[in-house]
Image (cartoon, rainbow over all chains, first blue to last red; front, side, top):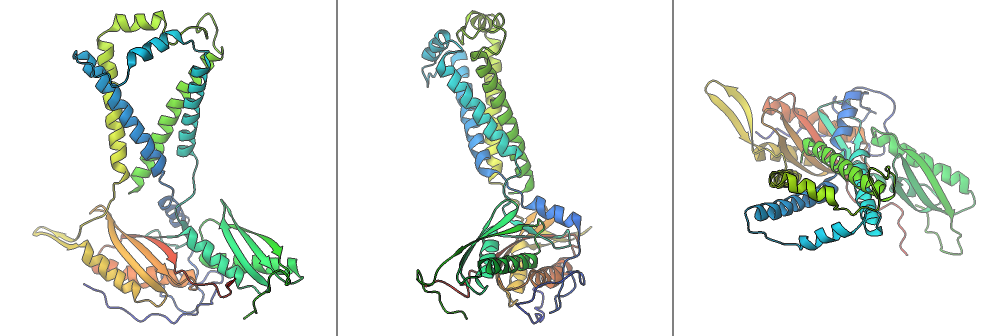
Length: 232
Length: 195
């Protein structure tokens, strides 16, 4: 049932999408195409790539299982007359009968329990970092996400392609892309602005559902320190 | 792993967190004399006379109740743990259902065709497809490695414009959702520092 492979459109790899054009589901031609706005599709994409919180959930589940199993084993074994005594709970009882609520041990212990609770609560409530950055597709049946690492690499390359940029590094923050660029030459502000423009353009071409702000932090590197490689 | 697990994880974490926060907070409050001292003294030991009396009066059923609650918690924990690895991949897919029986295709055949179809594109370096979801609501999971220079609209055109509709047609399932995870090929920057 292999579908025949049709011809693939000629690509203009440098092309940047312009404003709204024909719908994305039309065969991609060399012209600029942008997915039509579809809030439902965007919502579906955001939902699909929400973090799953596997690590805190796994830890909590293991602790819950062990604790429940231990208590059940001790209590049931004692009830049927063959106490396991995996832990010396007589001594724990003695400690409990002699230690007041205001003792430092109890205070520290309860503070730690409350803190742990707060951490778990925040793990569950905070939106967290999405595993992939959702992309506009305009189609609820097509959910597309970009790997964050790929996005930062691609933006780094866009920044590095700007003349007078010796090296650059893009990082993803919550709602922003922070670009650190090493610049040569005198026009620091002009180059920084060019970097911002290049990264913004590249970002626009990625068609992410959630917009990211671009900030550029530039440092000037003098020729004497490290000779700049020749521009292409 | 599916979205139900993600929702379950959130709920489990919120409930466990709330319980610990409330218990720890109350114990801390009692130790710090936040409660009226004629009602809950901070100087009282954790296990005092009334606590011992409570267990003596209600023994042994209170112990059975504790054991039951502990068992339930352990089972809940086990279940919570078990769903972490729950995938929702699908072995076969029903293409046609009729009175004479169902026609089904193996998911390997479907996904192999799609992967091949996509990998033939000049801007896609690698594509792997798997079928997931339920037989009633199947979906396709795609892992695509694409050329980073390719504009997104061209890439989306490759996916949604040709390969996926072809598969929908071939399977006769119009409502086939595709979840694609896209990464870019690691290419060297045009201007790399050599030092």
